[in-house]
Length: 530
Image 1: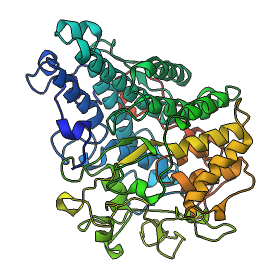
Image 2 (image 1 turned 90 degrees about the vertical axis):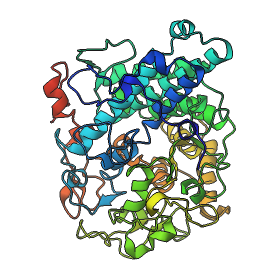
Image 3 (image 1 turned 90 degrees about the horizontal axis):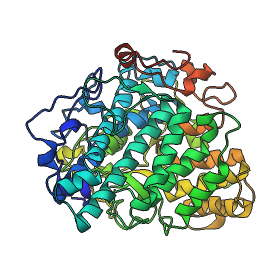
Image 4 (image 1 turned 120 degrees about the horizontal axis):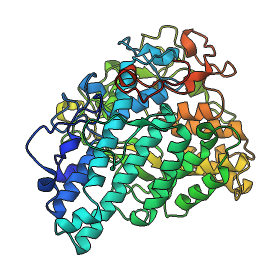
């Protein structure tokens, strides 16, 4: 069993956290008689409650894989990483799904609408997790701590927990800002009861997230000084660097913040993280051990915390029974769903040939002529449920996985620094940018300079992001930043629903606010085009 905060302590019941998030208002009815004063009566109660905030990222519910905290969506598909990954990857050249389930083809075809069940699930999952964080933040004020007799070191710890909950809330608001643009806004001061949240603009939300991350910086643990899987200062810096890189998307042209992206990427780079010697070690079941590169991850355990999302989904959906699922650590798994279009493996064919060790594919047929045939298109074997020694990690039923999913890692900070420098960010150095790109390529080429570059440009950085970060949930955001997501200037198979690809409407850089929320909350306005 892996050791991290919420797996060790179990999932505590928070009154307002065990409830469906997609109701008309914030009128939440407790599912049992436990009160906040019961839950938060002791220092250990605060840590157990923080475990619930983290656990909401990796579980569909606190009572089993066949249950969900959300309504209106199948429990197995309601995990945050599964929903987020699908929205970020199925909409790009990096992944295409063979399943013809309701609403799945909408992603490949770039023709989703405001009633798409999976998009609604993602939207509601984010709001649910914000609700969970708000509950903890509301109960961990200095006044509440004092009234409950929690003082000294215990109170100091609770304040750190509060800062972490604020980080997790800020992260979820970033997801909503990036994907949906203008969501409803609630925080710990929002009235509990019948209340219809106001909509916040993308620009105002950017300012709020920025302020929150800077506001909690001094309260978070120093980089690499927290328990594995818990947020620290470096996580806040990494999210700021990512936001600043995309500032012109969020705030409009002319609002670039590339100098700030460099500043915060530098903070992470200087915080003691190092690249793991082996790229694939980052994506196996014991990737928690001696991991010097991952800044923050969503953690999974195939025995003690089970759900059909997360890396269980990523690993099983990427293989079928013909690929020997046991070699991927899931002897009873293999769902035959997701694989790549040709554009992804072609990124790895360069002047040195296909010797880049990050090229983790299976099969010989790069072409996808039939979307519903899993054997068309190369399977992606980047994630596995195996240990460093090659054996399978423990897995209940031979399907659930223990591979942790990285939300932030050092390699991304190298790439942010390089891109922000080439985009003219103050404080960047072109030679250092090239050095960072070549550090990634040196690892990719078995520690040799065989794949090193002598110069870089913005296009080569986008390609390098594809090689380094594929299937980690970045590609949609990257293509939007480069102006390639909806345009006809960059095509991939089945973009826009046709074999050779086509450009689509520019408004699809944002997903729609769900119709169910619009119908229930007159304060909300739909995004343009839907």
